[in-house]
Length: 211
Image 1 (tube, rainbow, N blue to C red):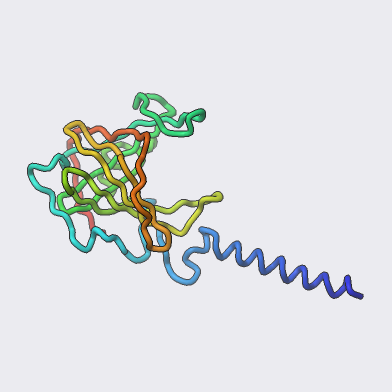
Image 2: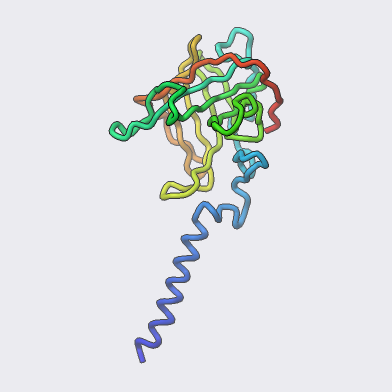
């Protein structure tokens, strides 16, 4: 008799555990409130904008190192032994090519180049990739953006990230990072190794960010 009563109880517990795991998975992030959404062009945007840098928007100055008639591009390849990305030739078929595009009104677009599309179209696709804000402070670039990890053990419902870059005439290179948890940012953490973003002149850049 006890085993007959115990079986339904175990089933209830199992179903409850499945419900909890599903509710906390990335696919159910928008179950109670919209944490993020996808644009028609594949970009990820926060359900409700909470960028700190949007409260006091930076206006690019003429003398700043950051320019808006270029993109900042990195070419990287994953090193399995070192467990990190390293600089590689952009023409390598296995290379991951990423770019950052800055706008005069303090906005920034971050995306990865796809071989299936023309690069210029991707630079001008303001509905794609990841978006955020930036400012230049004491000759350092502070960049804040929103991103979502989808799938796997590290999946989440979206977080705000803050990165600090070293500025130079050639481009920018990541120096320190801050990561958030439920809206609370941890302290700055130094990055020991990073792949630089090199300035690349591009003709035909257009579009005004609306985020």
